[in-house]
Image 1: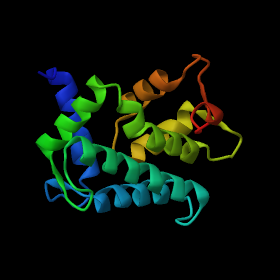
Image 2: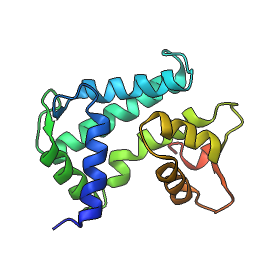
Image 3: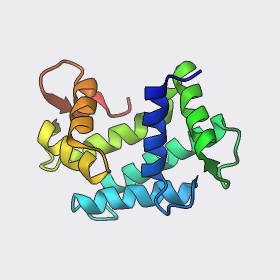
Image 4: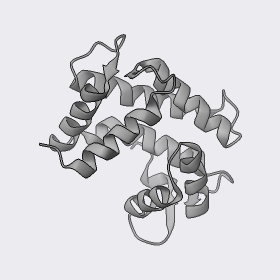
Length: 159
């Protein structure tokens, strides 16, 4: 059984990803979420960062759909989404599911292109994504691998 706090987190994520509010997630919802995030920070739609985020979000949907045994042309309801995320966490696949979208989000937050993301930049992107400042800060602290208060892009880029 999934702990209540984790279920609540996954359900909030579902609501954030359900961009059209129809109660289901499709590949289009993930594409739209990427578009909204890039627009919120002023990133041009066709830029390398925007394309990376679109690909990362598409990967997240495809991996979740596979875990839920749903065709990628299909849709996930809330329970399928929660079950798929739970399965990803318990099987060690969470990095494969969200890693590319996290890496692309970190790169999107690097507004000055110096390869480093500050808490302020990270928070701005996550606030645009619908998270509270406290949630954004908690996520930043969790991702700050060496605890120096900065996220370095090379730590999130694929080998």
